[in-house]
Image (tube, rainbow, N blue to C red; front, side, top):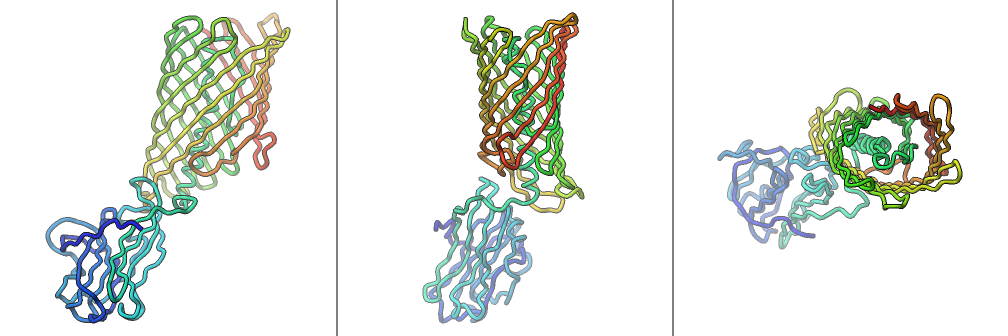
Length: 462
């Protein structure tokens, strides 16, 4: 165990939390006298021992919150050579949490059942999350040993499988983060289409949605898009709207480089619990095609922020800010088989979201929540075009495999691999734009997960 502090010290101003361990002692048993202080968030822990005072007043492990000033408040500080108070309440999780730590669990609080001479130990052990690094540690502050008393002041990284049990609020935030990340991936624009109008028209969705809509417009290097979706995972339902604006510079018919900004709104309800939020992302994108080849590449990297309202049970709501990122690379090619076009495609993406730590309306500390997912998607899209008197009618479809790995956060309902089938049609209305309809079945081959959905999109030319 690694000591975090063993330096001696004298009394300075503090405000007593009323959380300490004090017990009767036997002066003859001690080997010396000392006063030590140990930092703990915005508090400190005193471990004091003195053989010169009355036999029942000599050992103290006390938690105090710093307040500034020059005098003591409450009169509970132990000073060598004086008679201090005789008892305090045990150290509590609430008192430790008031020091700035999170997810506090008391492991033991031993005040000795008789005297220190017979018990040989006084102290507190607890497990808590440090908001500075969001890791969980085991803490211990104690006096140990009768003949040669030792000060114990340790902070050791918890070796358990998680960094502490997630609270219902954290579980709600983590679930909503994953739903929003998947909605974000689902509703991303097909940037390959900016370079190649013949690119795939079937949405490369990785979301458990029940539907989506799309309205897009493009004019030269400036383009915009609005998309929306509805999703369900277990008992949770969510809705999502994403607006995108972009512009690019065309180096040649085979390469463009641009920048885009996205704004979204998200809402999820799971019984009485809910989370809503708005946010933005911005960053560069690039699309390139190998000259003379039907092989096209797309890449984007976006970073942004979120502004959320969290209501764990519907009785109150808290505001919490967060950060996010999204990165994707995609490659697609084309093979013509008579009037049927087949397009193999592959996409890799990584998404992350995090919310900052905050204190809720009930004055409880809520630790920051981090969620991240990586996805790989591979499949075949196909289309068949028929000429009509009103315009071109194209039947579309796709079969994809999607593999999801939750790298941080609660495991999603769509973890590991699954299949996705899409069918649809697109109608080219000439100068009036084009209209598309599609439907999909997701979760093929995966136990415990199934999703169905439909989509409509309209492209306007001007």
